[in-house]
Image 1 (spheres, helix red, strand yellow):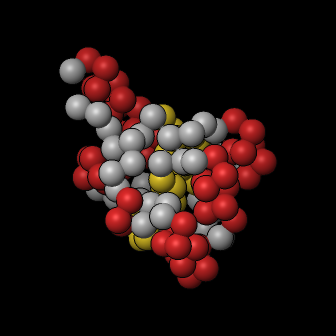
Image 2 (cartoon, helix red, strand yellow):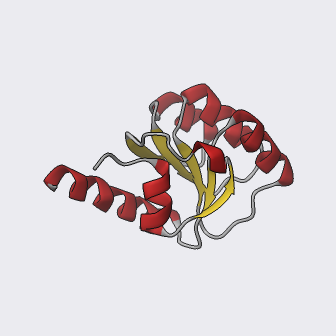
Length: 117
């Protein structure tokens, strides 16, 4: 089974904050980081970006890098501007009560299961 954002939302029990009409995007990998310049330099197209950042610049980076989605970890609330921008740009903005380490581990397990299926 190919992993897409919708499957990820269900498997990790994520809250869809914005971009709910774009959950069919294919997830190719993941990247965890909070320094925007690092994410711009090292993440890849199709990645799910896991961060604790909540400001609207995260959406700009996700659009630039063509990320599949953004997961805000640690149960942090996205800024209203971020939600509006994610909706406008069609970027799924997701939220988890779990910290970035746990979310990353769960994403890794999903990829590992997919390779062995």
